[in-house]
Image (cartoon, rainbow, N blue to C red):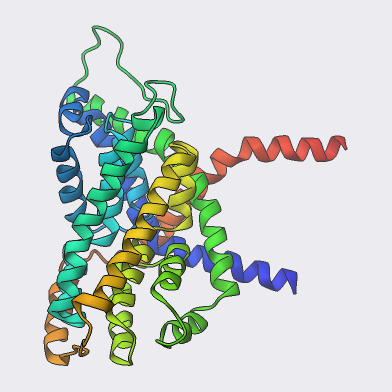
Length: 362
C-alpha cells in the first residue's frame, strides 16, 4: 500500500515537472543573461526603489511573458538578486502566471467579455497591490543583502575586461550553477508535495467539488486554488465548462488567480531564498484580494450572469492562442526534467550524505 502510494506520488510529481521543466530551463537562461547583461545601475533605476512606476514596469513586463508560476521563480529571484526591490519582484511574480497574451485570448473566447475583462483588470491591479504592500511591510528583505544572500553573485575583478561572450558565459554559469541549483532543490521538494496532494485529492474529485455551486464558497475556492498546481491557460476551458454547468462567475476568477499565481514549489523557493515574511505577504494578500474580486463579481458586477460559450468563436480564439503558446517536444521536456532533477540532486546531495552518515553512526 505504502509502496504503491509512493510510486503514484513520484510519477505524478514527474508528470507535473515535465510540464514546467522547459520553462524552468528557459528561466535559468534568461535570469543568468539578465543578471550579467543588464547593468546594476540601470536595474536599480528601473526596479530598485519603492516607486509606483517601478511596480507598473514590473507588472506590465510580467503580463507579457507566457511563463507559468514555476518558470517565473528563477526570473523573479534573478530580478531580486540583481537589484530589484521586493515590491516590483512580487508584482512581477504575480502578474506573469496570471495574465499573459494566450490566457487573455482564451479567457475572452471561452469565458466571454464580461468575465475576461474583470480577470484582465484584476490581473493588473492585484499584482500592483501585492507590490505596494510588499514595499510597505517589508523589513530587511526589501532588497537582497548584497553579496551575502542565499545566491552568490560573481563579480568581475577590477580592471577585468569582460567581452560579450564572457558575459554570456558568466551569466549562464550563474543562471544554472547558482540560481538553478538553489531553485531546483526547492522545486523538486515542492513537486513531490504537489504530487502527494494530487494523489490524495485526485482531479476527478476536485472537478466534482468545483462543479457543485452550492457546495463551495469563494473563500473555499481561493484556498483550494492556492494549494493546487494550476496553469491559467490550460484550465480556462475547464473553468468555462464549470460555469456553463452552473458555477458562479466569481469562482472562476478566484480559482484562476490563486491557482495560477501560487504553488508549493514557488512558495517554498520564496520562503527559503527571500524569507518567511515575504511568503506571508504574498500568499495572504493574494488570497484576500482574489476572494474580494470573486465576491464582488458574484454580488455586484455580474449578479445575473448568463454563461457565455460560442463554439465557433472559441475555436478561432484557440487557434490564435496556440500561436502564442510554445509547445515543447516530448524529448525536450524529458531532457529539461532530467537537468532540473540533476541540479536538485546536486544541491541536496551534501545534506543527504550527512544524514546517511548520522544513521550509520547511530
